[in-house]
Length: 423
Image 1 (cartoon, one colour):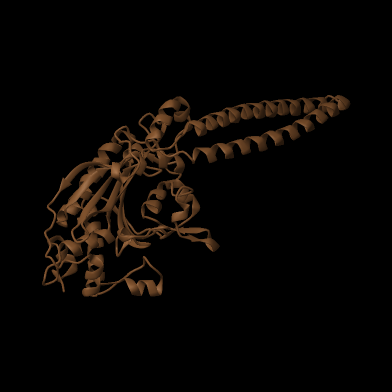
Image 2 (cartoon, rainbow, N blue to C red; image 1 turned 90 degrees about the vertical axis):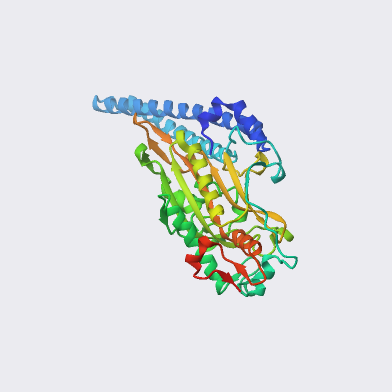
């Protein structure tokens, strides 16, 4: 959530920056400022009435003590009227604050100045590319056919037991999943991250804190009886560890990593780009989260970007990095880099990670603050990245490494899988 003072002091700037996200903020910002003015006026009126009421209460007490009961009763009548006015003003103030907050949470985060303009992923900016596109044999097949051929992923069984988008992994497929998870976690631990195993359900306050609610409510699985949501990513419970927390400046950087199942409804997804592992409703992901001092958050973003690149490099996958354009940037992000790996059998690039800086947008919603060296309270910056999401990594590994003898496991994973070939 954008800070109210920032909006008031930078009205035109906010409107222009949000236009890069294809969001017209001109009307809603005027409404926010008007509501804030009304909030201030109502607060002043309420304070004045309360001050008058306190003054009359003291006067009434003095009059009773001095025996001037008749005059005291007259003032008491006036004081009773003020109590009614006070209740009306308190209700008005609460209603204005609610309306103001409802408007504030409609505003996306402003993008970083480096974010390019654009409407979709076609307008994202390619900033880096590494690796050679594999040359596959003429009889190469996509991962969903490889999964069936080697009996390592069963999509039909998942459809039977649950529904589309919930596959079963079996045998070497399950062991490959576990190997990737442990590899990603160990690599993060080598970078001094602290590992967490978070709950898979969150309350509404947590969803609100990181910006999934109300913006992404339709994409989340909801457990109505308990008023809980299945997590779309470990980012949500991990970042919310610090909701309503005041940190010390010496606490930075806070570096956490977590493996979790992730759940996304992805309503309306269809077509060739969602076949097999390309888009699932339940999937595994290792997530890295950092809480950082505002002065160092973009330096940290670059370090996280390098960390994710190193994972893809060790997996021997060709990859590229794109800077998301305004139209493709999420509601909460100020700057996001997407990582894509090349799927040789599908002849397409698959997104496998996003690493983002939210600046103080999430921190403001969560009231995540720190005390600086002068003792002043300030908002921290939050960052997160997929390191990595498994489904499309698995898809690319299966397709790019297929041979006549079987699927070759990358060297970096063999100590985890305990096999070097899927056949």
